[in-house]
Length: 352
Image (cartoon, rainbow, N blue to C red; front, side, top):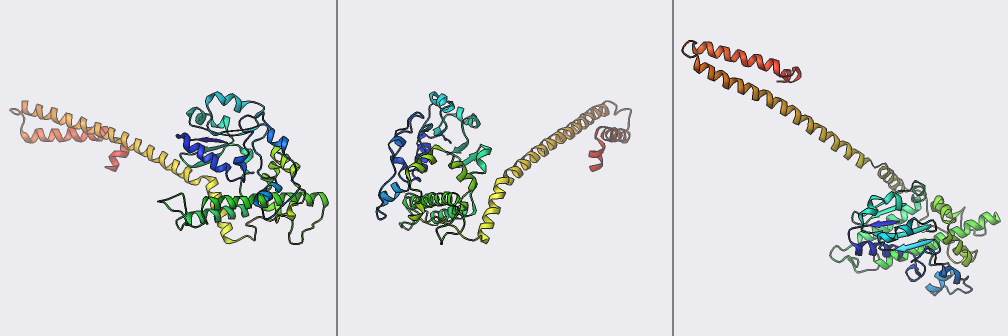
């Protein structure tokens, strides 16, 4: 992932805000500076005790924080050009980096699978292999829409650091706890899915089918192929679903709102607004050029007419003694009509 922006402080704050959504990850960045470092994984062991009343004990038992910056990974909030060789190195499997250098903006396809433009508040998935995996499932979309609504409904423009009603809902801590609940449910659901495949039977009566299917199956499949997942499996109990319910936080039957959200997303994926806008701009440009050319041509024709009129007037003055005014006027009008009919193209002449 490459974060780009014009202000170093903004791109760094955005990256740290993203990492803060994974519980306790900001306290476990000991190996993030170099892809060769792997001290965190080496010293991690399976938790042998659990106090459900102690949040930290629960997080440790569930395998959190998910260590995404282990061997082969790099986190560099501000990346100088001297580190580009490290990004392209074969041993660097993944990274989260930021930059203000326009060179990386021009070469984003080379250095990024996901490109985040902080100034424009846009996220572009450049890797075709990731687009399917990063598509939200119906419960995922329902969950993030509910979270976004809670934030927007309590947003205070005058003081963005706290909700307008000074309550808990919509606050930064509220957002992080919602992500914590989501991740705990995801981990529990994946563990239960593995149990179903291994034992071919269900032991939780209240759980119907495979709860992991409520999440994007393509994403879950890719995650199970990472070093992060291998570490998670090694340090956690096989039956985490006994502690946290294996169920998506927004699981439920399909509703009209879900269909509306899906259609809206499909329209956005087609980028119809951008395509229509581009076509409209191109058409307007061609029409403007066409009007300019026709205007220049017609202007030239009338300039020629005025020149002939002026010349005819001069001739009339010189020959006034031998040619009557009525005859001169008649000859002048005949010349103008003749020039007009011969010089103006038929389609313009007929239009006039």
